[in-house]
Image 1 (cartoon, rainbow, N blue to C red):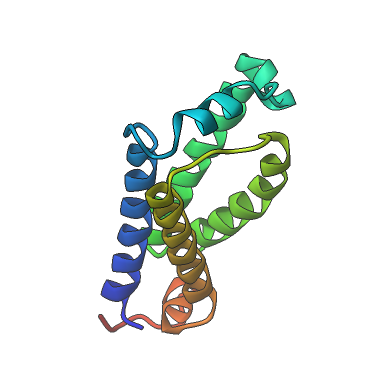
Image 2 (cartoon, one colour):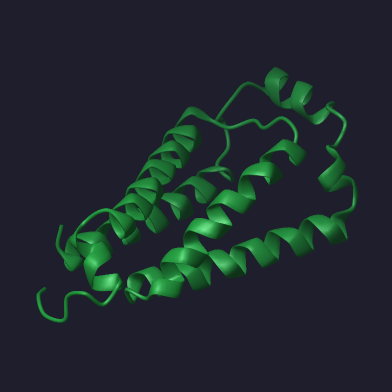
Length: 140
């Protein structure tokens, strides 16, 4: 794995995430009956307090962006921060309640998640890991 390919995986993950978020705003992803049923669900605990949800979400997003930049620049702290925020966000999913997404949104989200997981794996178990750890000083 070259550094350039590793960075392409990072860019692909970010692009897929942005595409998934964008598709959430497109109409006709699912039936009106399903949208009405979803709208009738009570809000989950995390979203009952908008300030808490916004604060947690913005903090996680900021840490993710900083970690992404660190990974892109091949910094050891970026690798640790990216892995840490990924693991720490898992319990947040339990607090978000049910979700509703279109097939295209789900596909893009899954692809982004797979690309992000590949990036984390490559950052720890590939020639990129040696470069991040400073064991290799030359190369592409």
